[in-house]
Amino acid sequence: MTYDTVRETDPAVADALEGERARQNDTLAMIASENHVSEAVLEAQSSELTNKYAEGYPGSRYYGGCEFADDVEQLAIDRAKALWGADHVNVQPHSGSQANMGVYLAVLDPGDKILSLDLTHGGHLSHGHPANFAGQVYEVEQYEVDEETGYIDYDALKEKAEAFEPDIIVSGYSAYPREVDFGRIQEAADAVDAYHLADIAHITGLVAAGVHESPVGVADFVTGSTHKTIRAGRGGIIMCDEEYADDVDSAVFPGSQGGPLMHNVAGKAVGFGEALEPEFEAYAAQTVDNAKALGERLQEHGLELVSDGTDNHLVLIDLRPSHPDTTGKDVEAALEDAGIVLNANTVPGETRSAFNPSGIRAGTPALTTRGFDEETCREVADLIYEVVDAPEDETVVAEVSERVDELTDEYPLYD
Ligand code: DSN
Image (cartoon, rainbow, N blue to C red; front, top):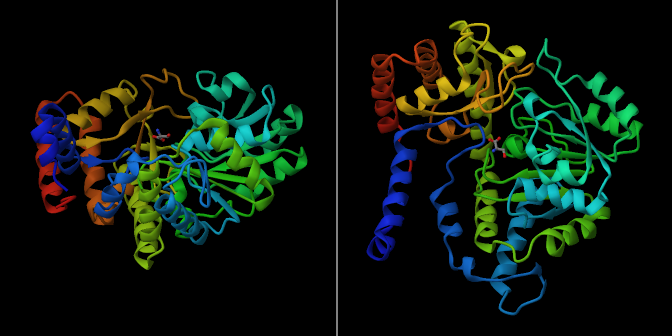
């Protein structure tokens, strides 16, 4: 795909688009929620469906001319059902947050109670943070991970549920390196007759490939975003049992969205189709193996991982034990100068601020897409460690940057 036409008509935007293409090619994307979609997904997302209004659902739209919109949406739905095994799927949410909003609107009233994981322990804004609509519309109580082990404290969660009596318990996290025991969260929900929403935004691809336990058939609602481990381009998705289908669909449209972004729905259809191919299972398994290799090598260098390792696609590094005077932002900035892009992140028991926290989060979905294996990820761990240990040393940063250049040349992205 070229930007030749944009260049002719709008060179300023063309510069930015080409800059971003080069940035992605020339750096290592290790923000755990990011990935690189295929050229087929990119093409579908830039299709003429961006022009089309299609309020409603396949076969029942408010506007005419929706036959091809119907085709792509039905393909996306059918493929999602095949991937995750859900009874009912809504592929219209514009994002994971919109998917969560759809579930809340479907079954909660303003003032109802949400029990969810604290943001600084790995939760998500849309699970009820005060700065987010969910924290403003609903009453929110939060559970935590055990600060000693870094694992969800399922017993404390259940006790909290019994005391708080939530209407819904939210599981699924943004910075949690361990397998989630959805069954135990369901037990807590059952004990207080609460709904259970499992937000698998980060692990959609791992669940689809069977390398992480699935909450489908366990939780009442499963939400996700479609651009992370599943690699299907920007957007969100809701899955539920048939009994909630009408409420969920009405909550998405007309409850919280207007016309669906049909070009993105087309991207989802293509990406889900790719994920149904046998190679996707290998990709997901490699993503986890790579995260384990990355984490183990970081530990060999003396860095401390929250929960002492990982079961999924990310590692969370607590810098305080090994580098007490270095903040996550210091490391994030120095690594970006070296061409490794990840994010500063809060850690359980955070003693700094959310803006300048004590940890960094690193993920392997995008590296795995560009072909990295365990050996390459161990080398990336070496590079990360060199910068963590000397973030202000320009010579170190320059040396790491040179090696990143070699790696990105060896593993190019798009043609
Ligand atoms: N911003 C995403 C993440 O990085 O985890 C979650 O929406």
